[in-house]
Amino acid sequence: NNAMIQGQPKRLAFARKYGFNPPNLLVISPTMRCNLKCYGCYAWQYSKKDDLPYDVCNRVIDEANDIGIYFFVITGGEPFCWGNFYDFLERHNDSFFQVYTNGQLIDDRVAKRLAELGNAVPCISVEGFEKETDRRRGKGAWARIMKSMDVLNDNGVLFGFSVTATRGNNELVVSDEFVDLFIEKGAFIGWYFNYVPIGKEPNLELMPTPEQRDYRRKRILEIRKSNKIIAADFWNDGPLVNGCMAGGKNYLHINVNGDVEPCVFVHFAVDNIKEKSL
Image (cartoon, rainbow, N blue to C red; front, side, top):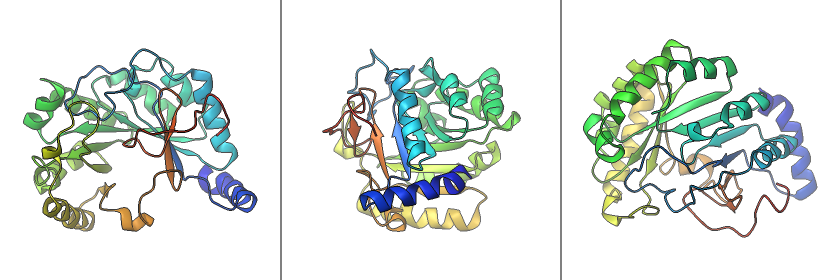
């Protein structure tokens, strides 16, 4: 509602002044600390030592609100490792936050706090079922994810799942068995990412083939038609948003160092948010 009622007039004013539209959303990585060490993590190259200063994070949200942006994605690193996370969500209670998380730190206490705040939707990363998820994320990760989803559902917190499609799991993660499980757990949305060979031990052999990517595109269309869940594919859904969203066209990424990057998968920046306004 804020994005439409408060945001749209601000966005129109920005467009009239500068001749282009502001992004629809911002992605922010306030910390790169994480409790897991997943094979192929895209964020592995960033420093784990320092977080993006809390005052800078708050300033970015305030400046984004000023130009009509009220939708934010929080990633990392593991957002629930960030000590200021709940204070941050509470301070910006007029904005919506989608949170990519490994789900390992979500217990009943955390779920209750998220329910109280009401402005954050966790999207929990999986790699398939137990075998695939534990192989990449560590033994026991799947069981903790299942428990996290249960406590989120029990406390009335909206949540979803996130999956990286690879050559090895592409067909599995769009199967009826896979999708039905998360519908039963209470997920309302599923995000699909194509594996990108960057970060920790990049491997071109993990990338889905063109045929696999096309298969996933067709299956996600079927999932949307026949299931009670929103399924979104950042790669195959490109035509729905007029191509790539990155570089400020529809979104950009502010990393833990304050560097303003076109995309979480494109580690290149010429500006730093610590040195200038949004």
